[in-house]
Amino acid sequence: MTNYTKKMRLIIGGGIFAAGLTFLSTAAAQKASAPRAQDALAMGEEHVRELLLLMKADKTGNVSKQEYMRFMEAEFQRLDKAQEGQLNARALNRGNLAASRFVGK
Image 1 (cartoon, rainbow, N blue to C red):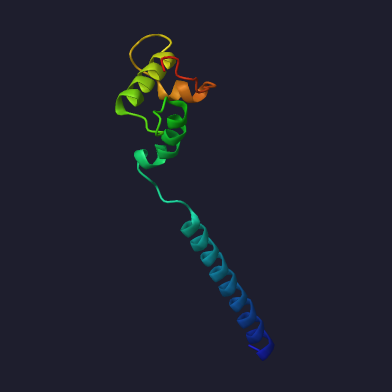
Image 2 (image 1 turned 135 degrees about the vertical axis):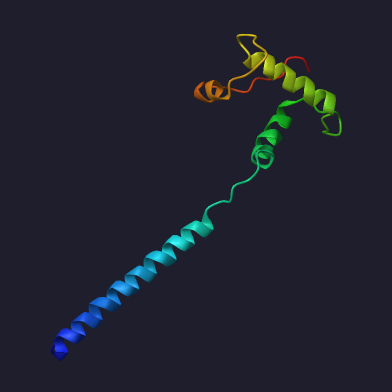
């Protein structure tokens, strides 16, 4: 085997090795930047904050547990159009839902 052939194999092998390292480091960086799975309560926290803005607050801006539960009961009844006492999450996700103002303020 000539020196030229050895050099070419070394250059090609080094290039393949460098490309492999680049690929692995990019994959590791993408995985590190992906959000970690959170529990359902933490994932819904932002939505609860948005709902609180729709609820009747007292003079200090607080919403009582009773007001919160009354609002959620009214929303459940509004979404349970068939009055079955249960909601189908998949059906609700397919529909175009819009938050309504709580009428029983």
